[in-house]
Amino acid sequence: MAAESGRQFWKRSAKLPGSIQPVYGAQHPPLDPRLTKNFIKDRSKANALPMKSKKASSFHEFARNTSDAWDIGDDEDEDFSSSSSSLQTLNSKVAKATAVQVLENHSKLRVKPERAQPALGDVPTNCKVNKSSSEAQLSRMSDELRKCSWPGVPREVRPVTWRLLSGYLPANMERRKLTLQRKREEYFGFIQQYYDSRNEEHHQDTYRQIHIDIPRTNPLIPLFQQPLVQEIFERILFIWAIRHPASGYVQGINDLVTPFFVVFLSEYVEEDVENFDVTNLSQDVLRSIEADSFWCMSKLLDGIQDNYTFAQPGIQKKVKALEELVSRIDEQVHNHFRKYEVEYLQFAFRWMNNLLMRELPLRCTIRLWDTYQSEPEGFSHFHLYVCAAFLIKWRKEILDEEDFQGLLMLLQNLPTIHWGNEEIGLLLAEAYRLKYMFADAPNHYRR
Image (tube, rainbow, N blue to C red; front, side, top):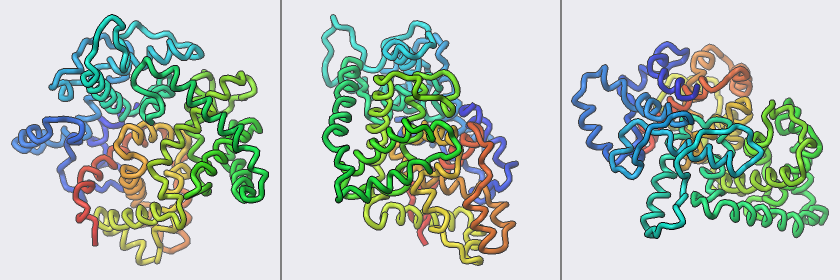
């Protein structure tokens, strides 16, 4: 569905309410130069094509090239070491290998795949491999995994894919089992060493705030109202806070645990995860889910920690950048806010602090994070363009409101409750275009 959304985006965008196509003109962004070595050559060829052909390139082309990447039944052969492979339609080898390893190494999954090629870092034991060559191969295959994940990851392979994309699980197959065992033991070592200190006076404020915030986390989803789940979240957040004294716990960080917890829980649960009773799982399984959620959330926060240090300077900068960007891409919306004295901080602070999690259903956040984890600096850099695209998506509704209160009520309660993969695919396509146009040209959005 996500890939289909990308393919249909350019056909539909002119018809969408609030489309900003006239603002940008006819040119669509070509493939991200980081994804192909022959970008400059292709770009010069594209310039020689008629305008109609140009429109078929860029994100449309990117989505088309990755649309079959997760087709586990695809048996085509392709040499990933070929220098021209990045320009060909992506084969499913990486996806197949990842899926097979999930199913072989994590016995709780019940889907049985076809036989696939060796996975990331899987090297025959009877071969002598040059270390630098092996590392280069792992790097190439990791890049392929990121490309395959951009349009969305299938549910059955998402847990292992997220571990790989976050950098928590090593690409080398021989190291994975021991790494997971060591990191999980390390996390519960932190619990044993530090968790009792929540009752000490100098940690009381931190623990009290976490304890207050946990029941407010996704209050309409039964999974997160279970006492056992809330205890897991309290441990994760408290240990993270005392290990990061520069920021400590800040309201909003509690939301960032939920996508990881749901994804890693789905590895053991076939039915609806949001209504699942976790007391049906073994203690060992729950411990694995808890530790993996902690480490992956920590990896995410490492890239955006200035969002949560004193005065939250990261968020202040991102909100200002959003204001500058919107003033360039849709001056009418920007002036409408100024006319009715709406400040961007009044609605966009939450967008940055919670990574749009309060604005979207959880299923949409998980799909969004497939792309964020496959993008370079997805949670810090690409998120800005997603927020800009998200705001402009509602331009018609924004311009229809003609007072301060009406605008704020709209922006704080946007009607996304029925959104799914198609809407997220369109949002990401628009963000991709904005990123291509503005990311390497910051003066375009500087007043």
